[in-house]
Length: 305
Image (tube, rainbow, N blue to C red; front, side, top):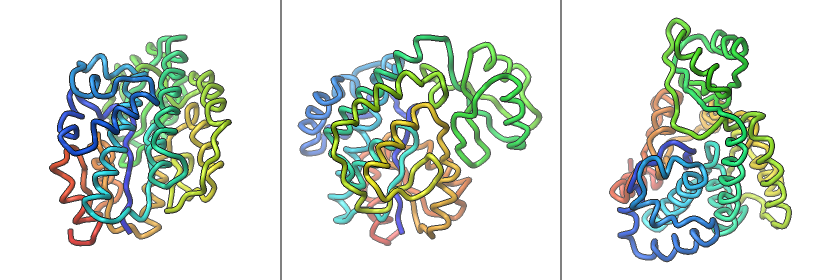
């Protein structure tokens, strides 16, 4: 059983879409995605600098579009789809396309709305996020509670992402718990916390007129790692996820329980592959960073790796 993982915010680098534009049909597809998301994905994915593509209004559509492009190219190269799919944070919007719940253009419209709404919510207070690496999980959670910080991402592999007010994050970094490292993340706000509540309403309104299909392959939610069988429920989970913690640790546990034999992380890849190497030890993993990685991913998908 091969699972495809769709990454979340923070993995993109300037120009990362450039090599994908060399593939037939990608420019046309990105043009359609740009129109749906109201973001010039080709310009931002090839020319914009790091500060520009860090803006969540731009970052979220870029990440989802890249995953969709890579997923299409992988399916063409391998001649088959994966057995299951899951997404981390905004990556869930790419995952529901992979599972046939909604179309690529519909998801790009949603991710454009999501990015703008979350940016607006983040602008209401100076907040941020920091990764806490290592340490005892309960001790980390207790420390976050002391500082009125929220564990926004339980990423597994000994990593929890804290989110909240900037002074509290500064205190966390200045006096880290023994055995931990605190790494500030280059994001615009405290995503997946109560600070994002205004964005939930915007996204709920955006999905109201959609008629989703039920998933046609195994789809895991990062709400709790469970398998989602209803398309309507999948969209509800994506809406509520904006202000709720990401439980990627539970997704990886579910992958292991399902007996997966490999994982492929789509573009912009790296973060989830790294977590899998620690949380799914011994499981073959391919990170599709550029089209050059498609052959290895297709080999894994077809059982040749």
